[in-house]
Image (tube, rainbow, N blue to C red; front, side, top):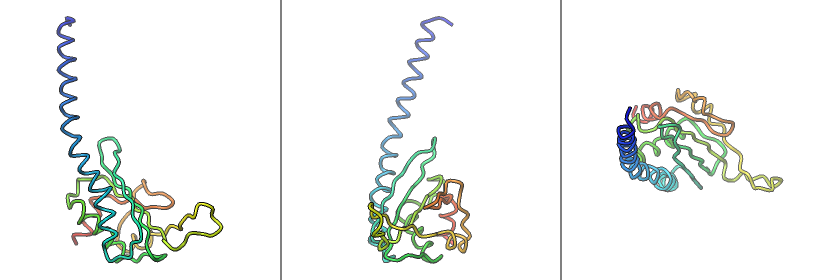
Length: 160
């Protein structure tokens, strides 16, 4: 291949990548704002006893995912309460089952800061019984303190 042809292909390729990247940035930013600002506000203004909430959106390859930590004014969560919490996610963000890969949710007891813990850590609430009762299968992205669910399963649950 001639050097001039290679240079032209490289320039066209770089231009195409730049165009795609610049188109994707605003949509991604607006999506992140909804997750990181509107979702915590919606959780706090709900009547679910939320004392604090943080949420973030992150990419895994090309898949957008959500991570959230919610402080509740109690140390347990029923199936109905977990469903109501997840409904706030769907109502605030989108009903599109393909919009996100998964949502990872951790719930803490806001009043449980241990006096012996120098960091004032709060105890996480076990969401597994409530998720099981709802028929939600946690994904492999679940961890010790949070459960992850496929976004499409959460949307389907909320829309039942």
